Length: 121
Image (cartoon, rainbow, N blue to C red; front, side):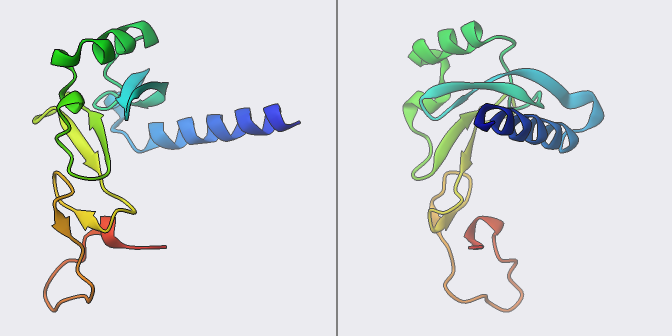
């Protein structure tokens, strides 16, 4: 029963990821997430490798993996096809910005858009 539930959740997440992409950007592939390869269904801009083998090869070749240079000061680095070649996921770090370098404001300031990474649910 637990396996069926896990598979159902994985399928629902895959469908939700596909819906968040532009129709021509939905893609089945793999991406470097942290220090491992994650495969599934998502957007072409994040799932840039067609196979797990291609992803693992890129992960092993440190020079082609921009995340191996640790561009994110905090959070998780994800390799992407768009410049600068990576995206930092800053959620739950208390920071925001391209490299998770800016401290989240403690009080919303007038006229300032509160960064979504700083919202705690």
